[in-house]
Image 1 (cartoon, one colour):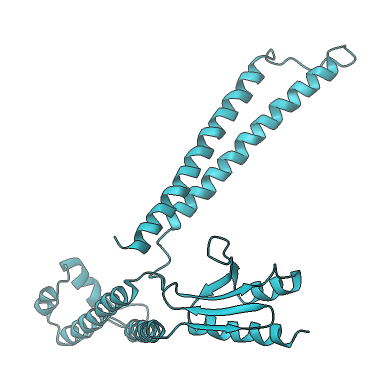
Image 2: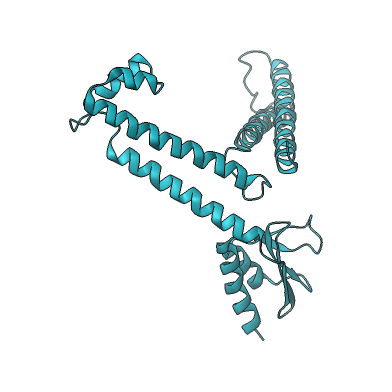
Length: 260
């Protein structure tokens, strides 16, 4: 597990811990509300005009609020459980130091699948079921490949090959971009009230301001997908160091430097 993967695991664990804590608090609030409700005799109405009416209404309102608190905490637990489950499911991150190697492995799998589909289609045209078995297809899959689809096509359709090939090209392009970015030299430049940096090691484009940026500047940064990172030195506004990130930074700098 590299440093990025360790960070992801720790992030997942934090979300799971928050989900567990919210679940426990929800269960406790629900138990408290039930206990409060059990103090009222079953079917007992509010005695209108009785000296106990106001106190009874307040008590029942607290029961309602406590049940509501339990529901909100349960929703909070679900929220964090979903966030925990989503960690690491967004594909290969550019922040992963092993991203290029992982992308190359993924590309190799795509190319292998492309070759396998082409070989399967050749075997299908010849009616060679044994060749399909040698390619690793199960008997059930072999029969499925010989079954015509809604358009009368057998085997792997051309769109499946085209989509797979396009995905391979996309990954090849991403590998080239990451290789180029990792070879870049760090950049630092002074602007109108800010320092601009391109940090290859941190994989971030960033703006560090001399003072807290005003609302209009914050709006500009957010519009270009920059996020405030108070945990980093200088508390910069950052986004990933990609070609898109560098282009967005140029647009932001143009506006900031044009301001009086």
